[in-house]
Image 1 (cartoon, helix red, strand yellow):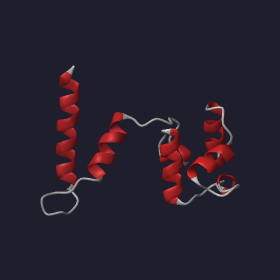
Image 2 (cartoon, rainbow, N blue to C red):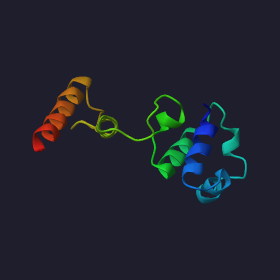
Image 3 (cartoon, rainbow, N blue to C red):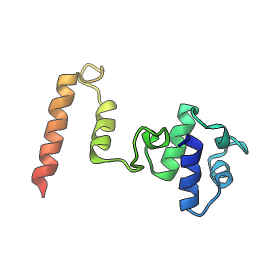
Length: 108
């Protein structure tokens, strides 16, 4: 399924047209129709945010349109930096992720 078709399906589920989505996001008429297999990354993010789905879903990399807890944790860790201002190491990332998962598991 193409990026455009996924966007069209999401719009149909909201009872709106693809043109409505383009209008709300300030895109020219027909912009989204051109997205058969690739898209401007910033605009892809904007469309994903508009529908509350992941970019991976729009790109066909996952069948689930919603973010999982693991997705949320990974996104937060992607934005994290260490005390030096550099991205956290893979080792630190694994430790922090384990701590978050343990906290969530034991919270309930």
